[in-house]
Length: 68
Image (tube, rainbow, N blue to C red):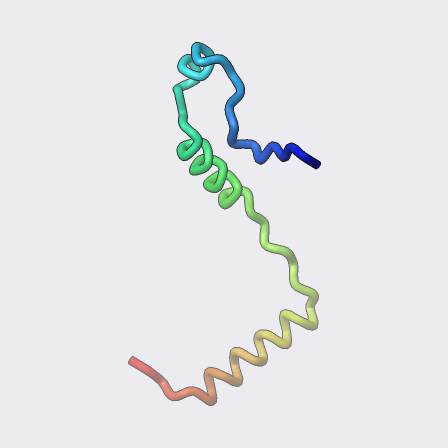
């Protein structure tokens, strides 16, 4: 498509923009990423993949020297 609305633009009139707090694009972007981060739900790993990762981490902990 020729036009992609990424959700940060404000097409309101100046008066409406000002009445709604006058947030610039940087402020809108910050609110957007914070909302996305707060609502993030990590995807569930298949049980076999989860077990394989746990085994890998345990093996690497045994193999690597302890660091302080």
